[in-house]
Image (cartoon, rainbow over all chains, first blue to last red):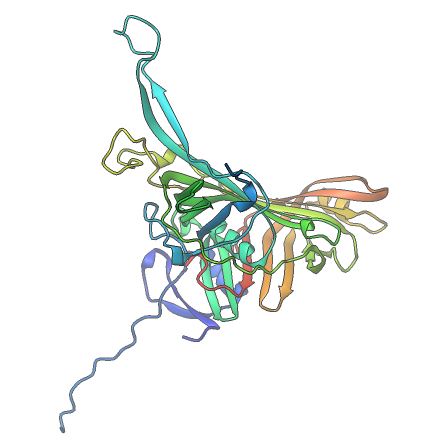
Length: 53
Length: 346
């Protein structure tokens, strides 16, 4: 997450978080519509053993 | 015996929010700021007695009972970027933090329950101390406080008193004595002076036309104090039903925004016309210390509800009261507060 972009979760916690630019003209309408700041989603991918080892 | 003078009083309060109404801030979550008003935050015990009960043979009380606790207080301060950010975050209730040292930006809006937001405001603890330790005079902490409202006043003149903020707060009633908190070092505050104001209301730039004289804007949550007491809301001493009830929630009721200003009135001034036409527009006020410390408040849609021509120091002026209205996209008010301090209301 860069500091110019923030993660927001949708109203009522339903749906996927999204990353938006931290500009008031973008944030304010979303905040009024129920979006709230949240931690970035866990993007760690499952690591599978290399079958060739 | 030494006299205790009020200049000794230290206050600190939650920069970070409490996890819930009953869990006090730790010392590391607090900051010390200074204040102008002398009033202390005295926890008030409400009592009742048995005077009305029959069977005693007389009308006089024979027993007194601890019923409940109240806490309320006011912070009167010169407006700085730190207290500005704190008041907007806790007073409006919804915050998005962005940025890194030294430029943190807090974008704040009111909570909108219809959009799924809570009606409970963020909680903080408030500590007052005079000579804590062996020679203690006062050392107590009010837990579970919320901002009832804030008022910004901007005046003409060079002094710090021309840019002030008043923050009123109320508490759950829970108080801890001694506080157990070591007050952190005072925060270096960056003043947002009146001379830095940028102001546009309803399409008129009142700074570039050099007409603004004074301005006042406020927000009030009208917290439901009685609604904080519900069956099971708890007691001052957990498990002790004789210690007096405390509140288990603090919710806002019907909130109110206010903006009024005085400006010079001259040929071409549009306030009276805009009053008659009920023209609407935004009202944006910005106060700046530097690139990293500022406070911008936007009333998203205002009309004029009153415009009255009078005089200020012999100059013809117009006093205008605005009606803040709800804009379907941007709500009623938003604040963008920049300061060097991390973790406010986080």
